Amino acid sequence: MTKAELIGRMASAANISRDQAKSALEAFTDGVAEALADGRDVKLIGFGSFVAVERKAGVARNPQTGAAVARPASRTARFRAGEGLKSALNG
Figure (cartoon, rainbow, N blue to C red):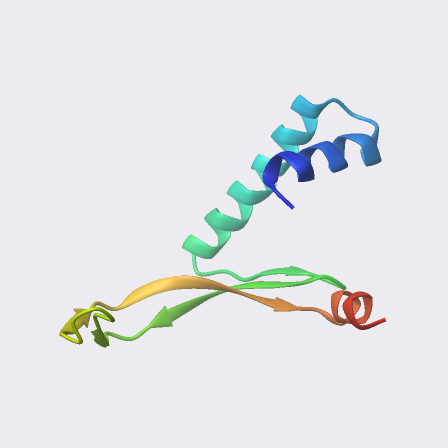
């Protein structure tokens, strides 16, 4: 599903305009990004959690040449599915 498809689905399900649905989705994604940048987790009970994690520096390999490349330490986000989402996926 693309962002445009999700916006359309949100608009029809909530009986709001596409512009309102787009604003709501952007507010959600901005809020999640800000919380993760501040080091806080975002937990949506029954759906899942967005968690900020630290990746250590390391060595990676260029797949074409096999040359070693230094990979700097970084922060990234992970999503952990909640029980409600797992149940929906597995019947």
